[in-house]
Each structure stands twice: as C-alpha cells, then as structure tokens.
Image (cartoon, rainbow over the protein chains, first blue to last red):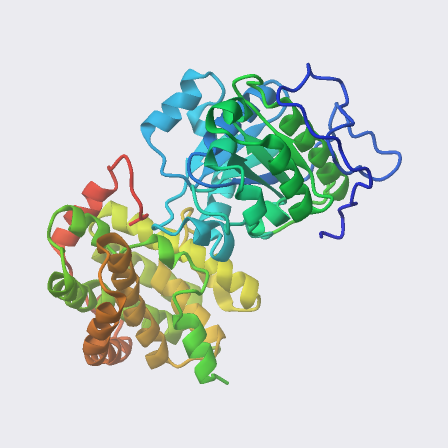
Length: 260
Length: 229
C-alpha cells in the first residue's frame, strides 16, 4: 500500500454491467480523496509532471481498446500521451488515428525484445526514455498512459515507471481469472473486468468474478466494463480523474518530482 | 576498491540498462536466414566479438582511461572518443542504437553513482555512445581497465546469445555451452582492447562488419520489430 493512498472504507455494491450515464461525481466508484479542502473535480490543478498510469493485462483483454476509450474521454480535457509496449503496427496507429482519438505524434512504441514484463518492471529505462521523448516532442503532458505488452497474470509495472496501474482482464478469458490472482489481479490500483457484454455468450458468471476479485483485492477497487456500451470507459476515466487530483496535490507545478 | 561482486553486477544481463531489448543484429540475421541453429549462431557471435565486440571494448577501455581522476582535459578526450566511434559506426541506425543504449546506461549510472564524471560526456542531443558511458561507469565502480573491456566484450556476446534463445527457441543449455566455448576468445578480445586503449583515439581498432551494417539499416525500417536492434 502506498503511503499516500487512503483505503476506502465503504465496500462497493456489485457494479452493473452497463454503467449509467455519467454522473458529475460517481461515489459508487471506489476511490481515494486528496487532502481535505482539495476539490478533486475539474478544473484539475496542473501537476509538476504528468501522472503516469500503467495499463497491463493478458493478450486480447482489451488494453488497446481501453486506451482508445480513455483517449476519447480525455480528448478535450487533458494533454495526453501514450507509450505502448505492445507489438505496435501501423495498423494500431491507424486505429487510434481513424477513431480520431489520438494524434500519432502523441504515441511512442517501445520494443521489448520478447520480454514485455522486463520492459515495464525490471528494466524500465526505454519506457522512461519514451515518456521523456513524448514531452520533448509535444510539450508538457497531464497524463501518460503506459500500455504493457500482452503478458500473463504475473506482470506488473515498476513504481519507478508508473504512479498508478490498471490491470485489465476480460470475461472471455474465463470467469476463474480473478480467483487465480497473481500480482496484476491482487495488487493493481484498479482491476477492470472487460467485455461484460460477452458474458452471456461465454458463460461467464460476473457475480463469481466480483466475489473472487473482492476476496483477492480487499478494498482495492474493481470495475466492470463494456466498451461496446460505454465507448469512453466513463468510470475508469472518473477513477483516473480522482488519481489526477491526488497527483496534482502531491506534485505541485512549481516542484517537479518523481522517478527520473 | 573494486570487488568481484561489482564486476559481476555490471556484467549481469539483469543490470537495468536495456540490454534485453537488443539482439545485437541477430533479429535481422535470423530474418535473413543467415542464423538458423547453434552452428550459425556460433559463427555470428564469433564475428560479432571480432568486430563490434573489439571496437566497443576498446572504446570502453579508452573512456575508462580518460576517467581516472588526474586526467586533464577529460571532456576533450571523451569528445574525441565519441567522434572516433561515430566514424567507426557506418550505419546511422547503429549509431542511433549505440547512443540510445548509452542513454539507458547513463540513466542507471546516474542513479547509482551520482558523483561519477558523467558531466564530462559530450553533450550530444541524443546521448553519448554506450561504450563511453560504460567506461565511466566502470571507473566509478572501481573496476580496472581490463575488467571494463571484459564487460563490454562479454555483453556483445551474451545479449545476442540470449536473443537467439528467444528468437529461435534454441536449447538454452547448448547456447550456454557455446558461450563457454567462446570464453577464451572473449577474454582475448578484452585483453587486446585494454592494450589498444593506450593508443590515441584515432588509432583505436576499427573492425567493421558491412553485412551487419546493412542488416541494421533494413531492420530499422521494419513495421514490427521485437528487438530495438
């Protein structure tokens, strides 16, 4: 547990499959609050450096789709950059460009030498370089999403690389995945269980996944997501907004700090 | 005072300087069908040791020589070494890779030995060549010039060998046995490189591998690469 993180005391209800329309402040999303007196809502304070959020998870769980959804959500709100450790083709770049969600200049790809977990956990220099190069190329950023290569349940991000990490699994990967645990499921700051729209087709029991995630994660938050029904991943975006408010409080503009 | 442990630490492929992402040209050689098995991997490694291994080790040793505390004009010496290594690296892609690896090593070095003489490295916008950073790093760790050259030569072998295991699915025991077979050659290359560092920068070894240069240029144009080089 990071010393700057307050464990939410309220245990959330099971999340609905299709989230409701965006409320201005969704208190059902488990989150932490900044210091008393700090308003965590827009306009967000500018932080001294970008908040870096890792997005990890197995192959095909929907990491790139979540990145695209978050780019849509933050398009007119935040100065955004993306570093991807996934096998990155011009098709992937075209996907983001066609969707009109991100200028290719704001994306950097990192080669991982067939060791995707090494690049985000044990030897993070190339990713840190990519973050620096983004800021040099397009100017100061508020948020950098660092997408991992598709890996297995044991992959996590180094705290030297990211401030927060989201682990994405999907219902089609089997409803036993949360029970298996692994550091991604147990310790990520946010667990996203994706593609809930497919649950009836693959026979996945969301209640089982929710129960197992709770057992594995204690008070750490879990969100169910269907990007088909929610193309801007509303509640994940809200969670990031809360984390941004924390980050701005901890890293004021005048005093840039953090891993270098 | 250097300890054997520091030598091992800096030679370890797990030292966080980005080695895992580089195949030393092997990915391109595999794609070209030139390396397919243990025998061709051994030939590739022997060639790499005699060219990039020797040159890199000599420049690391020369940077180590420039790093000893009483050196005057250290920044000038390092700038000359940087220019000479550029001249020995014909492929622009490989120049960029060497500087990129230099940046990665420098990031680790600054975090571990903040008082080392890294400020004397040439202020090129894309970073100094990796062997120069390695020389300063090894000096800061208290290693000898020969140990420095050994780490450089050894790294050119192990990085590519490890990539061979990953790209070709070769038996890891047999690849290690292959490295054992190359150990004498590696030590000999390091000794040659350490001796060569007594010469002025323009006299340092300039062994080249044109096919590796061509492969590197082609590799840099691939749409999808698993390795950065």
